[in-house]
Structures are given as structure tokens and as C-alpha cells.
Image (tube, one colour):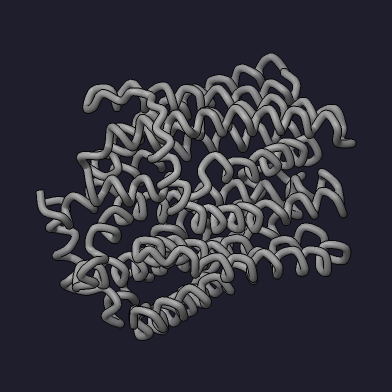
Length: 471
């Protein structure tokens, strides 16, 4: 199996699996949003945002460095995975203790306090997912972790449907979230045992080595997490849980769509790491191709959401969430930058330059806090959405400039300009013809592809690439 075929098939396993997983996740989330209403779903979102801040401390860059190091030296896989798994269990246990002790001292409503305590156990399961799946990532066998995620999603939808049926309280929905991640972790562990014998080990030397190389990227992850979560916390503080609900409902959809760049980078990051040393054609070409495709896909999704935001929101969440229709297109345009940031960050990290990301994300976090404090009092959840759009775009521009300055690597300006023009034409056409959403999707795909091929953004090379991958 050649490299291109391996990368594309591996990404395809993830994308297809994730699409199925999204269906299993989005359906229960939509039903849950309708069942809980804007205020209780706001509480649910606040708790997940709060716990999400701590997830970075069980990783702190170690997961990414583990994949990078194992990609370079596969003989060390069992030793690294066993030692890192033990370290992360210790860290997760310590964090859970800190969270439980802290929330008991904080002046939070009882429902949020209990929700945080219940959900904190997810840190233990999340801490082990990447070490257990390391073998599959470096050997391009992601169908196994994908299957595990599907099984976890099935457990989630079964529990959500059951809890809605019995009219359960909010606490049950927190438990469903935790149990789904427990199922995923157990399944990945069972699958990994088929390929290598992983034993939990205590190895302070390996711990010290990985902590040392991971700290710069760990700081980046912390800044990323704060940048993603701080807006919800400020919105809850200034405007309450109902406003958080209106913001978080469309955010749940845009977050699920990040499966597309996530899947691509799971396959490509080991390749970036492996071929960085010679900085040759494979390293640069992988960047250019992945950037182009993710930009094309994300800007198409943004155009569709701009035209059909009200229809999408009301069909998914009901008329109670009509205010979310103003937020949805803003978040979808920010998703364009989120997509390309996946590529930019992984390319910079594969080059061992993760320290350069610290000031970039520090600037973005500062902007996020300032913009939320300025915009939220007047514009509520719309202000939070605008802050997301601005901060993500700043990250994209800064990372692009860094790659150009240090490695003379940059996105093709022609591709960017022509794709932007194609999306503007598509936006104008959809605005004029005013057809239903179900019909607009296939029509938009045909028009968009016709524009991309006519402007030579896509061509024979891309068709041949697809044939090499699947035929």
C-alpha cells in the first residue's frame, strides 16, 4: 500500500466513522436540547466547558509528542505507551481530587456543583484514549479506534433516549456522557491488545523526557482550551444560562464538523513528523494539499449556513432556539479558520517549533477575553460568537506568517483567491434562486464543483490522487 493510499484510506475510515458517530451524537444532543430547553442546556454546556479546561492538564502536549516520537521509532511503542499511560492515570486522579475539592468551596448552584463532580470522572477515560490508540495512529489503522468511538456513540444515544423516555433529571445526562467515554476507552484497550502487549510501567526517565519536550505544546493546548471555553464562562457570568444555551446549541453542530480536519490530521501528523527532516516535496506537498481541501470544504459549509441558518436551527432545535440562528452563520465562518488551523498547527508542531504557538495563542486568548467583556454586555451571545470569529482568524494569519517566515511554506494565493471567488458566486446564486435546503445541497455541490474545476482549483491531479487512493 503506497503512502497516499494509506493516508487517504486511513482518513476515510475516520471521516466515515465520524460521520456515523456524529449522527449518533447529534441526534441525541438535538433531542436533549429540545428536552432540557435553553436554560438547562446552558447549565449542561457550562459544566462541559468547565471540565474541558482541565482536560488539557491530563494531556499537556504529551499525546502529540507520543505520536511524534513513536512515528520516528516504532520499536519504542510498548515502552512509551505503558509508561505514559501510568503517568496519565496518576495525573487524572490528582485532577479529579482537585476539581471535587474546588467546587465544594466555590459558590456555584447545586446543579452545577453535582454536574461537575459527576462529569470529572471523564478525565480518567480521556487520559488513556491516545496512548491506547497510538499503535493504530502510527500504523494507519484507525478503523479500530473509529469502531470504538461508534460503540461509545451507540451507548450514548441509547442512554439519552432512555433518560428522555423516563423523564430523567439533568444529572442522568451527565452520566450518559461519562459512560459513553468509558465504553470508548475499554474498546480501544481491547482492540490494542490484539496487536501489542501493553503493560503499565513506572519509568521516571521516560516521564521526565516527555514532560520536558511536551511543556511548550502543553502550554499551547492550555491556551487553546482557554480560548475555546472562556467565552462560554464569561457569557454565563454576564448573561446567565439561557444565553449560554442559545450560543451552545449551534456550537454543538460546528464542533461536530471539526471531525473533517481532525480525521485528516490524525493521518497526516505522523507523515509530517516523519518527513520534516528533509523538508522535501512530501512535507510541503502534504501541507499544500491538506490546506487546499480543508479550505474548499469549510468555505462551502459556511456559505450554506449563511443562506439557510434559520431553517437549519429551527429544524434541529425548534422555534425556542430561533435566536441561535443569528449565531450559527458567525460560528460557521469561524469554522473556516478552525479547519485551516488544524493544518497550520500540526505542520508547525511536526517541525518541533511548538514554542512559536505560545505567543500566538496567548494573543488570541487576550483578544477573546477583551472582546467578550466588551461585546457580551451589549450583544450577549452574538458578541461571544463574534469574538470566536476574530480570535480564530488572528490565529490563522499569525501561523501562516510564521510558516512563511521560517520555512518559506505558505498556502497557494491563487487557490485562496479563486476559492473565495467561487464561494461568493455560489452565495449570490443561492440567494437569488431561493430553493429549499434539501434541494439546495446537491445543487450547491454541483455549482461549486463546476466553479472549482473551471477555475482550475481542482483538476486532473486531484482526480488521479483520488484514483490512487481508492482504486
